[in-house]
Length: 363
Ligand code: GDP
Ligand code: MN
Image 1: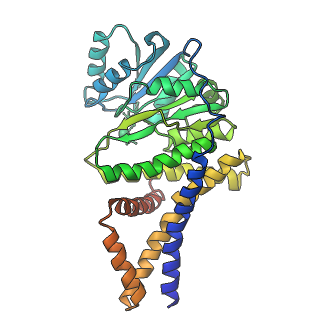
Image 2: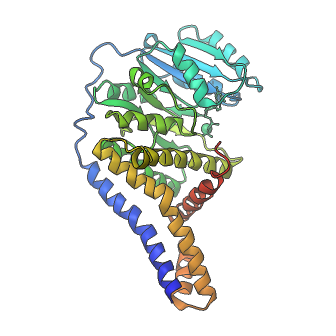
Image 3: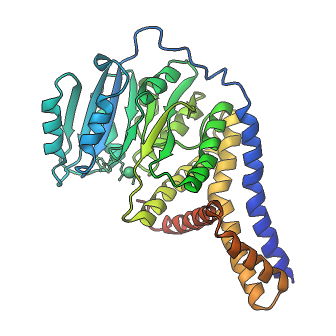
């Protein structure tokens, strides 16, 4: 009986907290984006360095470069820096060929002999970049035509230190899209309040002087994009995802689950490190940012466990013949036909799996 009560309490709590956060976030959406408002690119557009780190990206690199080539941003106001870390699949040949055919765009290629990770590659590029604005972008993603211009326009504001993008799923499965909308809404809402808790490597733009102040991209944890934005927020600048900056992400079909778990691990590392700053190092953060990060840390680090532990306890109670747990299991199983619910459940399981894997593998 006690087991039964506990298991139900855990499950109820698991669903209530994100619901409350969702309602709060909807409230933030009504905030005007005054402090983050766009001043517009009235003066000469700032010079931008777009950094693409590549490791074996032969399948996508040509398309990636062409996508950047077609950006609605003056071509003499940006440079592209590719840092390749010893690709073995012909990526470099494809890049050279593409560059030969496009003389009217400034592309530089840096070859790192050995592979030392993405963040290391980004820092190598940063040292060679000329721009006041640094944009990093994964090779396996594309932008809309106005993504760069819109991102830079937001960055012109003094209080904004970093800008990232909304992810548009490449597939048009509508329920999958709805689920993304939930996360997308949180990102935009948090940005209205202060800063997004999470940044995306598909497009992350930073003010160069701030990047230098924090010592470049962090190489000691996976979420180089989110954590860089976090460090900038901790200095009091906003790191936002505005509605009008979008990117398209390619979701791998092979190795999908490993990919999801690795990504979840990066977020877990990001939030754990943040908690260390706040709880152990006692660092002072902007109040709104602290609130956002505490909520998100809870949702990523603690809340998934309530679900998994609650579920196990419910199953145990059900095996012992308790009626309410049996009914709950049946209802839960029936709800799995709803894709949003299924995706939610999957995500909780992935977060728990990632937390466990993170104990011995920090990749
Ligand atoms: P995921 O999307 O999180 O699975 O990460 P990816 O494997 O797609 O990597 C993101 C970007 O970083 C891609 O453009 C990769 O080619 C690039 N990348 C990953 N590892 C390295 C590396 O060691 N060196 C360099 N230069 N780029 C890397
Ligand atoms: Mn990728």
